[in-house]
Length: 165
Image 1 (cartoon, rainbow, N blue to C red):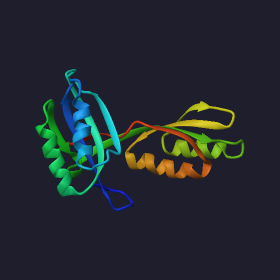
Image 2 (cartoon, rainbow, N blue to C red; image 1 turned 135 degrees about the horizontal axis):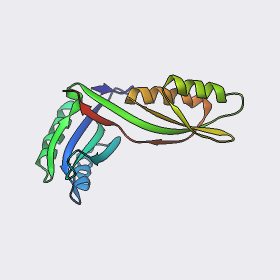
Image 3 (cartoon, rainbow, N blue to C red; image 1 turned 135 degrees about the vertical axis):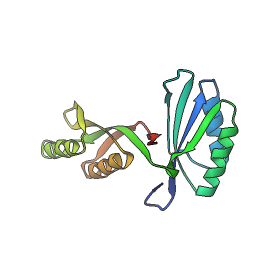
Image 4 (tube, rainbow, N blue to C red; image 1 turned 90 degrees about the vertical axis):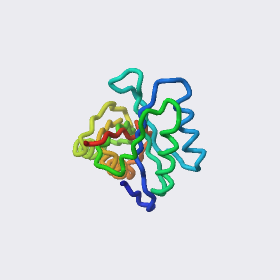
């Protein structure tokens, strides 16, 4: 289970759902209706074109989040719900970050991006756009190192996750 620096547990919940209109709205409504914020949300098709995997990162208390997952299972069109934070799992996130880059600091930014396995996807007169793909903590560490350079814009995919077993 991931615990953020503010002490709140971050649960990674996946739900296999049928590709039907309104499913996403019902899932989000159930979670927000219980007073929880969804910090990250990603939805994409699985190997079965009639089923999608919904991956959410939700902060909260273990006991109450367990109740939310039990309620999710009861929704029509929800096939399976798993709180991955209770087991071993893999996670990835993709970000594009535009960083102010002067002639003086450009090489330092490029070097840091390389250390994190990043790719420079756009070179502009006063900025660089860097793509980083990795575990959520890895991406977060890179973002922290970029703050002193002045982050101009960020686009994040949201976490995707899968159980190891």
